[in-house]
Image: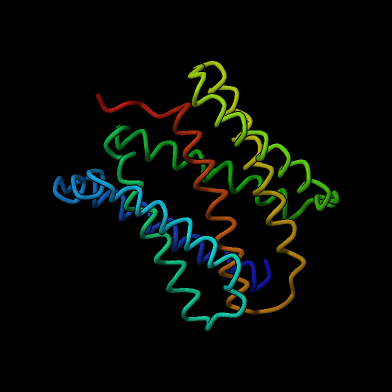
Length: 210
Protein backbone atom coordinates (compact mmCIF):
# COMPACT_ATOMS: atom_id res chain seq x y z
CA UNK A 1 0.00 0.00 0.00
CA UNK A 2 1.41 3.40 -0.99
CA UNK A 3 2.10 6.16 1.51
CA UNK A 4 -0.92 8.18 0.40
CA UNK A 5 -3.41 5.36 1.07
CA UNK A 6 -1.76 4.72 4.42
CA UNK A 7 -2.51 8.32 5.42
CA UNK A 8 -6.07 8.04 4.11
CA UNK A 9 -6.84 4.95 6.18
CA UNK A 10 -5.06 6.35 9.22
CA UNK A 11 -7.20 9.51 9.22
CA UNK A 12 -10.34 7.54 8.46
CA UNK A 13 -9.61 5.38 11.53
CA UNK A 14 -9.00 8.49 13.65
CA UNK A 15 -12.33 9.92 12.50
CA UNK A 16 -14.23 6.72 13.29
CA UNK A 17 -12.69 6.46 16.75
CA UNK A 18 -13.60 10.09 17.53
CA UNK A 19 -17.18 9.50 16.37
CA UNK A 20 -17.80 6.28 18.26
CA UNK A 21 -15.97 7.36 21.43
CA UNK A 22 -17.94 10.62 21.48
CA UNK A 23 -21.21 8.84 20.83
CA UNK A 24 -20.65 6.31 23.59
CA UNK A 25 -19.55 8.94 26.12
CA UNK A 26 -22.55 11.16 25.41
CA UNK A 27 -24.91 8.15 25.73
CA UNK A 28 -23.72 7.68 29.33
CA UNK A 29 -24.48 11.29 30.27
CA UNK A 30 -28.19 12.04 30.68
CA UNK A 31 -27.70 15.82 30.80
CA UNK A 32 -25.78 15.85 27.53
CA UNK A 33 -28.37 13.60 25.89
CA UNK A 34 -31.16 15.91 27.02
CA UNK A 35 -29.33 19.00 25.77
CA UNK A 36 -28.63 17.41 22.37
CA UNK A 37 -32.03 15.90 21.66
CA UNK A 38 -34.28 18.55 23.20
CA UNK A 39 -35.28 21.77 21.50
CA UNK A 40 -33.51 22.51 18.24
CA UNK A 41 -30.00 21.42 19.23
CA UNK A 42 -30.10 18.20 17.17
CA UNK A 43 -31.20 20.14 14.07
CA UNK A 44 -28.40 22.68 14.60
CA UNK A 45 -25.84 19.87 14.90
CA UNK A 46 -27.16 18.28 11.72
CA UNK A 47 -26.81 21.59 9.86
CA UNK A 48 -23.25 21.96 11.22
CA UNK A 49 -22.44 18.45 9.93
CA UNK A 50 -23.72 19.33 6.45
CA UNK A 51 -21.81 22.64 6.40
CA UNK A 52 -18.58 20.95 7.50
CA UNK A 53 -18.90 18.28 4.80
CA UNK A 54 -19.53 20.92 2.14
CA UNK A 55 -16.60 23.05 3.31
CA UNK A 56 -14.25 20.08 3.52
CA UNK A 57 -15.29 18.73 0.13
CA UNK A 58 -15.14 22.08 -1.66
CA UNK A 59 -12.26 23.87 0.06
CA UNK A 60 -10.01 21.30 1.70
CA UNK A 61 -7.49 21.20 -1.15
CA UNK A 62 -6.81 24.93 -0.65
CA UNK A 63 -6.67 24.84 3.16
CA UNK A 64 -3.69 24.77 5.44
CA UNK A 65 -3.11 21.04 6.16
CA UNK A 66 -3.57 21.54 9.92
CA UNK A 67 -6.88 23.37 9.33
CA UNK A 68 -8.10 20.50 7.16
CA UNK A 69 -7.22 17.95 9.85
CA UNK A 70 -8.91 20.00 12.59
CA UNK A 71 -12.10 20.40 10.53
CA UNK A 72 -12.17 16.68 9.75
CA UNK A 73 -11.81 15.81 13.44
CA UNK A 74 -14.46 18.42 14.29
CA UNK A 75 -16.83 16.83 11.78
CA UNK A 76 -16.20 13.39 13.30
CA UNK A 77 -16.86 14.84 16.77
CA UNK A 78 -20.15 16.51 15.78
CA UNK A 79 -21.25 13.31 14.08
CA UNK A 80 -20.45 11.49 17.31
CA UNK A 81 -22.80 13.81 19.21
CA UNK A 82 -25.71 12.85 16.97
CA UNK A 83 -24.54 9.22 16.88
CA UNK A 84 -25.06 8.93 20.63
CA UNK A 85 -28.67 7.92 19.94
CA UNK A 86 -27.61 4.54 18.56
CA UNK A 87 -26.09 3.59 21.92
CA UNK A 88 -29.49 4.29 23.47
CA UNK A 89 -31.58 2.61 20.79
CA UNK A 90 -29.44 -0.52 20.43
CA UNK A 91 -27.65 -2.81 22.88
CA UNK A 92 -23.93 -2.07 23.19
CA UNK A 93 -22.99 -5.66 22.29
CA UNK A 94 -25.12 -5.33 19.17
CA UNK A 95 -23.46 -2.05 18.16
CA UNK A 96 -20.00 -3.58 18.61
CA UNK A 97 -21.01 -6.69 16.63
CA UNK A 98 -22.35 -4.65 13.70
CA UNK A 99 -19.27 -2.40 13.83
CA UNK A 100 -17.04 -5.48 13.44
CA UNK A 101 -19.22 -6.88 10.65
CA UNK A 102 -19.06 -3.51 8.88
CA UNK A 103 -15.28 -3.39 9.33
CA UNK A 104 -14.89 -6.85 7.76
CA UNK A 105 -17.15 -6.05 4.79
CA UNK A 106 -15.43 -2.67 4.35
CA UNK A 107 -11.97 -4.27 4.43
CA UNK A 108 -12.92 -6.99 1.93
CA UNK A 109 -14.26 -4.53 -0.63
CA UNK A 110 -11.48 -2.03 -0.02
CA UNK A 111 -9.02 -4.82 -0.88
CA UNK A 112 -11.07 -5.72 -3.94
CA UNK A 113 -10.92 -2.09 -5.02
CA UNK A 114 -7.17 -1.99 -4.45
CA UNK A 115 -6.22 -5.25 -6.17
CA UNK A 116 -8.82 -5.56 -8.92
CA UNK A 117 -7.78 -5.24 -12.55
CA UNK A 118 -11.33 -4.35 -13.62
CA UNK A 119 -11.95 -0.73 -14.73
CA UNK A 120 -14.10 0.36 -11.79
CA UNK A 121 -13.98 3.98 -12.92
CA UNK A 122 -17.16 3.31 -14.94
CA UNK A 123 -18.94 2.20 -11.78
CA UNK A 124 -19.31 5.69 -10.31
CA UNK A 125 -22.10 6.78 -12.66
CA UNK A 126 -24.28 3.79 -11.78
CA UNK A 127 -23.60 4.18 -8.06
CA UNK A 128 -24.53 7.87 -8.12
CA UNK A 129 -27.71 7.12 -10.09
CA UNK A 130 -28.64 4.45 -7.55
CA UNK A 131 -27.89 6.81 -4.65
CA UNK A 132 -30.05 9.57 -6.13
CA UNK A 133 -32.81 7.02 -6.68
CA UNK A 134 -32.55 5.89 -3.07
CA UNK A 135 -32.80 9.48 -1.80
CA UNK A 136 -35.92 10.09 -3.89
CA UNK A 137 -37.49 6.80 -2.77
CA UNK A 138 -36.68 7.60 0.88
CA UNK A 139 -38.47 10.94 0.60
CA UNK A 140 -41.48 9.25 -1.00
CA UNK A 141 -41.50 6.60 1.73
CA UNK A 142 -41.66 9.33 4.38
CA UNK A 143 -45.24 9.88 3.20
CA UNK A 144 -46.07 6.23 2.45
CA UNK A 145 -44.53 4.71 5.57
CA UNK A 146 -44.06 1.24 4.06
CA UNK A 147 -41.80 -1.12 6.06
CA UNK A 148 -41.27 -3.35 3.02
CA UNK A 149 -40.27 -0.36 0.89
CA UNK A 150 -37.93 0.79 3.67
CA UNK A 151 -36.27 -2.65 3.76
CA UNK A 152 -35.75 -2.60 -0.01
CA UNK A 153 -34.26 0.89 0.19
CA UNK A 154 -31.91 -0.21 2.98
CA UNK A 155 -30.73 -3.20 0.93
CA UNK A 156 -29.98 -0.96 -2.04
CA UNK A 157 -28.11 1.52 0.18
CA UNK A 158 -25.90 -1.27 1.58
CA UNK A 159 -25.05 -2.43 -1.96
CA UNK A 160 -24.37 1.16 -3.08
CA UNK A 161 -21.91 1.91 -0.26
CA UNK A 162 -20.19 -1.45 -0.65
CA UNK A 163 -19.66 -0.46 -4.28
CA UNK A 164 -18.59 3.06 -3.23
CA UNK A 165 -15.95 1.59 -0.93
CA UNK A 166 -14.40 -0.48 -3.71
CA UNK A 167 -14.62 2.40 -6.18
CA UNK A 168 -13.11 5.03 -3.85
CA UNK A 169 -10.12 2.84 -2.97
CA UNK A 170 -9.69 1.93 -6.65
CA UNK A 171 -9.47 5.61 -7.62
CA UNK A 172 -7.18 6.54 -4.71
CA UNK A 173 -4.59 3.87 -5.49
CA UNK A 174 -3.63 5.77 -8.66
CA UNK A 175 -2.70 8.90 -6.71
CA UNK A 176 1.07 9.05 -6.41
CA UNK A 177 1.45 12.24 -4.39
CA UNK A 178 1.92 12.72 -0.67
CA UNK A 179 -0.44 15.64 -0.05
CA UNK A 180 -2.00 15.72 3.43
CA UNK A 181 -5.05 17.65 2.22
CA UNK A 182 -5.85 15.07 -0.45
CA UNK A 183 -5.45 12.39 2.23
CA UNK A 184 -8.13 14.16 4.30
CA UNK A 185 -10.44 14.24 1.27
CA UNK A 186 -9.91 10.50 0.81
CA UNK A 187 -10.38 9.83 4.52
CA UNK A 188 -13.67 11.76 4.48
CA UNK A 189 -14.94 9.74 1.52
CA UNK A 190 -14.09 6.39 3.12
CA UNK A 191 -15.38 7.59 6.51
CA UNK A 192 -18.76 8.39 4.93
CA UNK A 193 -18.79 5.02 3.13
CA UNK A 194 -18.15 3.22 6.43
CA UNK A 195 -20.64 5.24 8.48
CA UNK A 196 -23.47 4.80 5.97
CA UNK A 197 -22.76 1.10 5.63
CA UNK A 198 -22.71 0.75 9.42
CA UNK A 199 -26.00 2.62 9.93
CA UNK A 200 -27.92 0.50 7.44
CA UNK A 201 -26.41 -2.79 8.59
CA UNK A 202 -27.42 -1.78 12.11
CA UNK A 203 -31.01 -1.53 10.89
CA UNK A 204 -30.80 -5.19 9.81
CA UNK A 205 -28.74 -6.75 12.56
CA UNK A 206 -28.99 -4.37 15.50
CA UNK A 207 -30.84 -5.57 18.60
CA UNK A 208 -33.07 -2.97 20.19
CA UNK A 209 -32.30 -1.99 23.77
CA UNK A 210 -35.86 -2.14 25.12
